Figure 1: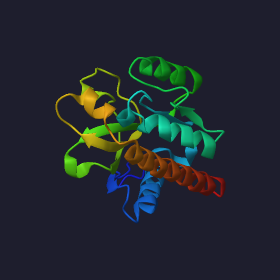
Figure 2: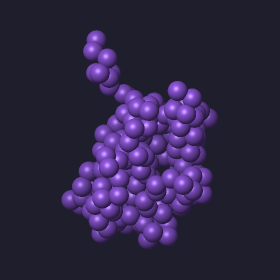
Figure 3: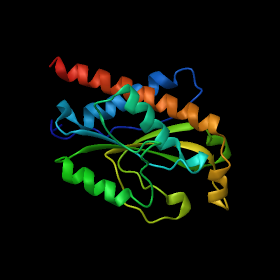
Amino acid sequence: MDSKIMPPVAGLSIHYADMLCLNKVTASIGTLLSHLNKFAARPLIYICIGTDKATGDCLGPLVGTRLKMLLPAAHIYGTLQSPVHALNLARNIREIQDAFPDPFIIAIDACLGNADRIGFINIKPGGLVPGSALHKDLPCIGDFHISGVVNTAGYFQHLILQNTRLFLVDQMAEMIAKSLFLAQYRFMGTINHI
């Protein structure tokens, strides 16, 4: 097998309340970082998508706000104070591309799904298409992405997002932020010892 060709990296889907969630999510993020951004050759950017105007859509900004506290030197776009949402996503992508040559982007966003999937954190290689549940035409973003199923998909998506329990979103955001912090800490520690 050619050493330049990497095997595909699998994703992960796990409920935030699973006892092993923190360990598994951290490991999955770490695997993606090490396979897709070998030796941290590309600058690491977090883009946390959503708005604080709807509880179901504030997963990204909550993650971004927590990450700012855990990783103050990290490049983080999208917090409760300065959210990245449908109206400014394209501008933020341009700013990232102008500021960083060949950025490695981790995208985080809330999503809707089946009732039995509420509370699941999904980590997948490849880009994220934000706003697809609301039929918005937004650019795909990310080298890999993390999504959290915050409520059920169906009719009146805006109302569903408005009526999502903040406790659920907050708990999921806490798990994602801690996992990203631990994964980056371990990844950078590994790189520094090579």
